[in-house]
Length: 405
Ligand SMILES: Cc1cc2nc3c(=O)[nH]c(=O)nc-3n(C[C@H](O)[C@H](O)[C@H](O)COP(=O)(O)OP(=O)(O)OC[C@H]3O[C@@H](n4cnc5c(N)ncnc54)[C@H](O)[C@@H]3O)c2cc1C
Image (cartoon, rainbow, N blue to C red):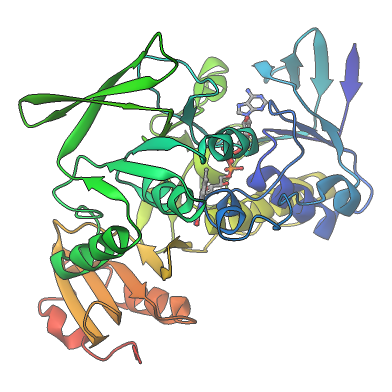
């Protein structure tokens, strides 16, 4: 069958929802289709590793996209081809015509050798949440030292699981945070009874005949094996750029867009986790965070509608922040958190409340607001001020720049 819409959005995540809302700011009547591979309508992902674990009475975080935007949701619909000359996309045996197209295809979790199952959860979706929660009555190995692994190790422990947490890093969060703060986070895991195995790299998985899954890992050169009722993995994501590549659009680590979130094809935009965009302060980057998904999604939708209604497009000049919660600990941050950079710590209370600045090439590239709230605008202002290489020869000038207490 053939369907024709003014706006077609490929992907049914948070960027897609925001884009439909952005379209409606400009164009109240244009027809919108959201084609999403998942069976569920758009929902927020952060509660899947936070609120739903803290408080099981939390509702599933659906965004109410169809009601708010009158977009037509085509769910369980995987787009397999784009014909830019004909301005159509293909999904199953159906053809969808568009006047403006958004790629909001996000990313997919990296996997080890075993595919996803009830016992092996590569954590990304609401279905993954239900699979992980079903494991919470037993012993779960959580793999991965990034945001998702860390939050899930905490979430599963709060839900009563016996958790063994494998991180390849020398300490929990050692790649992102200064040493004292990593040690602080580790103490919190210890206090909550999580068995943390640092320096442990998971290599492959094996299903046993007695119904457990074994994680085969390495500590340095030494192999170790851990059997559990289930494994939950946060190994990072790969951006879903294949569609863009297959229709001749530039994509490397992300679909390349300009400051209007537009590809080289004036009718095709990209936003959210999949987009490589020129950040107004930090330069070209791809950001896998919710503030980016919602604000860039909305901006792309706005510009798609501006295009079709003959209004000027607006540049996307937002530098996104992000946040994480681990047990009772929490933070917001802007830019890069990389403990290998020059790090300046400014604590009101050591490793409890304070600001950590990250500099590279005598330029400020990241600000971590640990237990410090309502300061992301101040962090952005500092990044804008000190972003040129050589502009920050002495990072100690930043002490006290953001009030931490
Ligand atoms: C558990 C979890 C917790 C998180 N917590 C935080 C947090 O605390 N703070 C923070 O800042 N960020 C957090 N994030 C990251 C944030 O949620 C993401 O950056 C954001 O959701 C990305 O949205 P997106 O729409 O760009 O991409 P995605 O969410 O990846 O959505 C893309 C959608 O497109 C679909 N799709 C892909 N290819 C096709 C195709 N060919 N056809 C049709 N559909 C397709 C996918 O199935 C998917 O549904 C978290 C992420 C997860 C998974």
